[in-house]
Amino acid sequence: MNTIIDLEIDSVIKDAESFCTELGIEIKLVYKLSNRSLEIISERSKELSTLYYVSVDMLKKRVENGSFILKKEDQIIGHIFVHEHQVKGHFVYERSSLWVDNAYRNYNLGLLLMARITEFYSDTFLISIAQTPKVHYYNEILGMTHVTLSKMSAVLVQELEKLGKLRDELNFKYYVNACFEAQIRELK
Image 1 (spheres, rainbow, N blue to C red):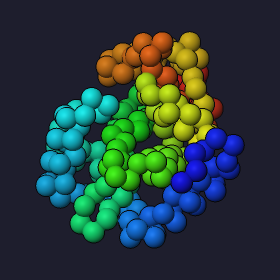
Image 2: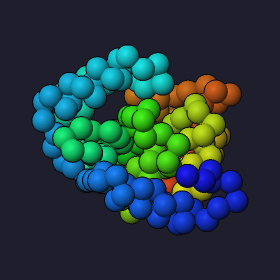
Image 3: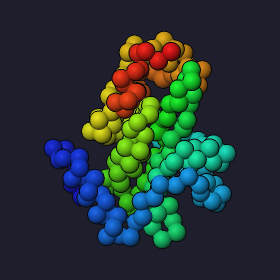
Image 4: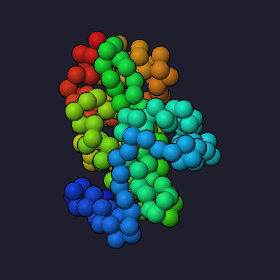
């Protein structure tokens, strides 16, 4: 698979979809997963330092918002969820728990999952709070905008602090979709 540098995003996504088709990997939008699947994902989040720990109960709530999974035979080989927050009557969805099995990395499947969830939430407020430069790059090529805390409304910053989502801007970056960016300063 090619890296994304200097490639058209649509082409990279099509290549990732073709890879899935060739290997019999299903890309599914789900609103419910078995308890066993949720337990595996929860354990995975506990074991991997790159994922924040998510309990089975938290995952049950998140999957109800619509999650994308990559499934080969009966194994989940990739997933992405969103965490719903409410900020002064507005629903804000935070992308979370992105994971792709090591055997299927380097085929842009993480980017494919990010693209699907970003498109799915294009008409509402979507935020990505990430530390990894690769995720920052993916956010940018998916059309999300980097925003600093100074560009957010005071109410949003206060809510991020209450939710425990206020992060050190030297290590973490906030990215929002176009819908959210259009109203991020006015959110009251």
